[in-house]
Length: 231
Ligand SMILES: Cc1ncc(CN)c(N)n1
Image (cartoon, rainbow, N blue to C red; front, top):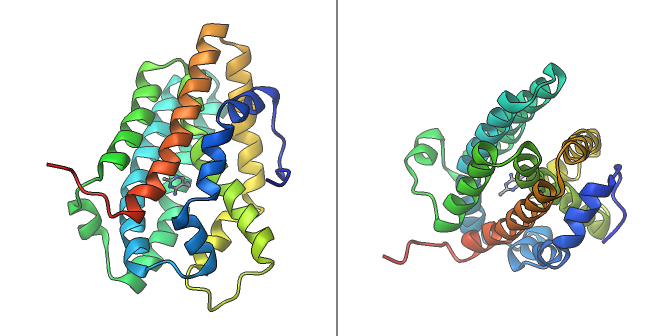
């Protein structure tokens, strides 16, 4: 794994260290490898994108809930903006692929969540409502961090993203260096909230982070296998 292009404060390093194996597993997932190569079955990508649109709604809810728990107006606004970005910026990516792959807002709203997607969403919302502030942000952080780390890693591996790559827009979005500042902001907040918490709360935040990293792998997996409810 190459060095990140943003600051990683000590508490974020502790979280990443605790999730090292699960984090690395996402980089090796067959869905990710096929996406990078451009050989990923369009049906699998469509399945993933539709589930992801609903996941991002939950991310925005969790970020909005966290904003209500921040004391500083600057922090409140940052989480409101993070919620907005998930729906607007990543929403544009989804709308673009929706046009190409034939899905729209109605299909997304009517679709049933897969077990893995539902579990990941519930984990984030539960941490945002029932956990301490550091735990809430610990559960939220792998979402942007893993994708940005992955995007930058894949760009480095590919060298360049050709215009005719079927997943060029996805690869370009998550390798965009514009996200480095976003990462500095969220990891800086994670550090501050960890500093203000006691050790028991910090450890729960580490565990919440690890759980989200596991769910990130499970999110590729649910799309890879077109996951269905067993009964
Ligand atoms: C499941 C998942 N995790 C992370 C990201 C990047 N925001 C995403 N779009 N979807």
